[in-house]
Length: 406
Ligand code: PLP
Image 1 (cartoon, rainbow, N blue to C red):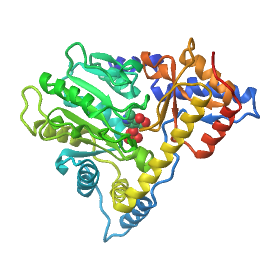
Image 2: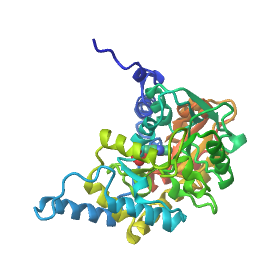
Image 3: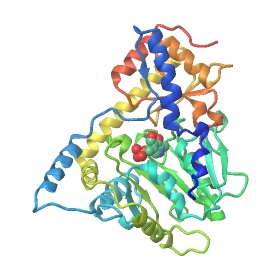
């Protein structure tokens, strides 16, 4: 007799984070639009991108599509760990040229974005591994942990620690970190990351580092990769993606680095890398070969120039938004090194009250911070990955308000 997987019923209200946004947030937006049909709404709830693909990547996609209809150039299955040219390009043009980090292409596994691998990577570890996750956090870290039925503790992040967690105060096996952070937009200094690396090496724990927004970092001396910290290869796995800085959200190309030097209890160097290759080969046979060619082009000199323009555009959105919100007396975090503005609710308001008030007063739609964890209560996340027109419309509405709250 088949029985359902009860872990799938453990999510908040039996819904994923994306479903919660679509149902709870969207139902309020629809009610507002019905009540005020003449008022514009400015949707800043979704972390999806709006800028088009870099033309260099688009051209590579077209060329590789033509290759597929030509019998002379047709290719089928890609190497399951990813196109070797792409794996090498990530090592050379992303890690080596920008970050001075040396990796071998065997340490890089191509994925269909960061989302799937951010949960799946847990399969490299024993079922009873205890997992530490910052609160608030990108929800799939928690969702993936609940689904895998692994023990979980939270690492509080608030204004007192600048949204960078302290070390766990009980033993853990895996620690999720994500900088620049979604939802808070916070970044961590080299010294702050060093503390985690030392902890992980001492306790034979592993850091799972989500660096999806790393190319949004503009503040000098802020690490873009955990591997900028000495010895991090011995204790950290890094997940990244072309989604946000190269407009690949629909194309689905990301990667995970499982360093040869990574070891835990009872393993030798290279063993975890080898085990991930086996897991990859059993459960994942690579992302679309065309998309991988596009990603190689995004890492070419011309592609990188275009990607920098995309990132600059979103960061400008974020700054405009932050200035407009601060002008009406709201306290904002993030925005400088990430496409997210983490806005504090006026005193006495919870996330949903703030959400409703901002919607009514300005038409701006964010995501209530409480959706990202208990300590997100009292905040709202706004995404600056939208169109400039929408940001400017929102700013105009904000200018018509003198002060929000109190
Ligand atoms: N990690 C973080 C922190 C994210 O914000 C997102 C998407 O919003 C992802 C991972 C998933 O990205 P991808 O499109 O590469 O799957």
